[in-house]
Length: 185
Image (cartoon, rainbow, N blue to C red):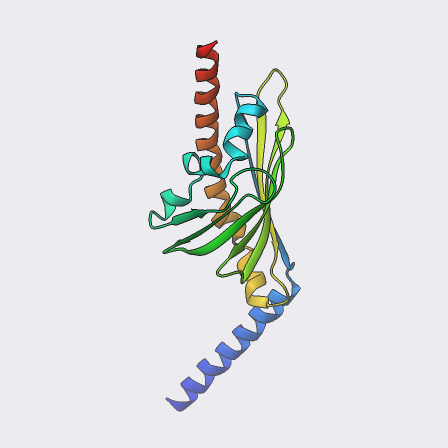
């Protein structure tokens, strides 16, 4: 019995060492990106993206974690616009760093009381024949920790589907808003 425990211990130590070595060889950065084609112009899209008070209409976060409570900052649009949140899935803060109706927005994110930081952006491109391609990205640095580097490999599969859902909802909201504007003319 003692020999079995020693062998199991050795195997665990070797596996842990291998995971650490592999983790050290992995990149220290991650990036997630998704896009959608929206049949609405940039101004309609930016009205939803550039104003944080509109984010509940299309972001998937509360759908995934209904306990989230968002606290808006002093301003809701433009550089410096911000919000914080708490929920069962954790806490975080978002601060808009750039905002342009032509190009989109960029923002800084902090999760778990600032322990994890990343940068995000929602950019716009014109589509041939009208409409807007919207590209949502997030990128970050995980440092030298081999376990964090291993976890960074999962960011695309964890965050990507949420971005896809949010972009689907953004497209639906923007297209409905564009149809409403057209009907009022």
